[in-house]
Image 1 (cartoon, helix red, strand yellow):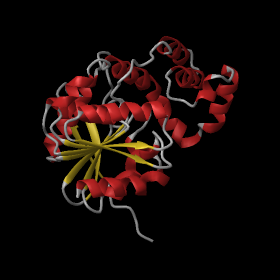
Image 2 (cartoon, one colour):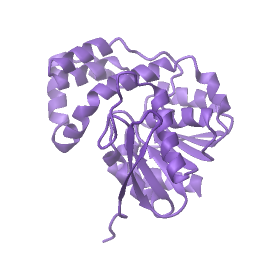
Image 3 (cartoon, one colour):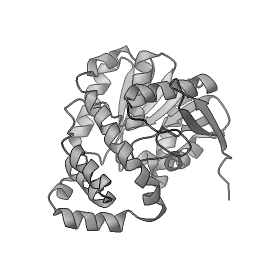
Image 4 (cartoon, helix red, strand yellow):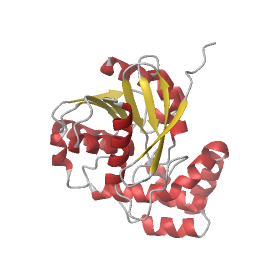
Amino acid sequence: MSHPPSLRERAVTSADGTTIAYRTTGDGPGLILVGGTLRTCDDYLPLAHGLAGSFTVHVVERRGRGASGPQGPHYTLADDVEDVLAVQAETGARLAFGHSYGGLALLETARTHPVFERIVAWEPGVPVAPVPTGWIPRYRELLAAGDPYGAFACFIRGSGGAPAFMTKVPGWYLRLVLRMAFHGEAWRRMLPLLECNAAEHEQIAAQHGRLAGFADVSATVLLLCGGRSKAAHRAEFATLSEVLPHATLETLPGLNHLSPSERKAAPAIAGRALRFFL
């Protein structure tokens, strides 16, 4: 039985003094991997290991997670850009993979600083249409009241990303379903990220109206989306691919928005990314 490549724990200091931890595995040209909302570095290790046979993969622990520093009260997307730039300067990596919010952070980095040659972005959080935020005040109230499952239910019902049936069931029933579906180690990792979730969705919403600016991205980009993701969302990625000057859009059948952080999907996604990067 083959064993996963070893991991090296590393850290850099971002522009505002915040510590940004990252884990390094593999050998070869440098590749930075940036994850999404409600996910930690641990969620992307299977994907990183799938890439590590050809690349030195640096998996960023975004601020607000693990050994990295907090988001802070004045957090914006620009902080993530500075964090990515700090890791890039330390590692010299010219390739990158971003998932969801991490894809937005990478594309914004590439828009303002041409440090990457090639980027894979899995369903990046670049808004084409307005992003719902009306759920956020109640979400924060529930978190403050010590009801994380209630807050999570509020997020699912209000954010627009969940299957339609979840928005129609009674709140008490959805809370019960979430208690059964989210527990154990995965839930313990997610709990401290619930406050970050609200701040990051506010930042996604704040990017609406800025789509045309991504025409400044000089890197070659492979936009990937899952065949099981909502058709409306896939249409938004098609719009983004038309704005990016050097982009290709592909759909991977049977996968969804969360697939890069799921062990079972890692081999297929790593295989497609390797063909693009090599």
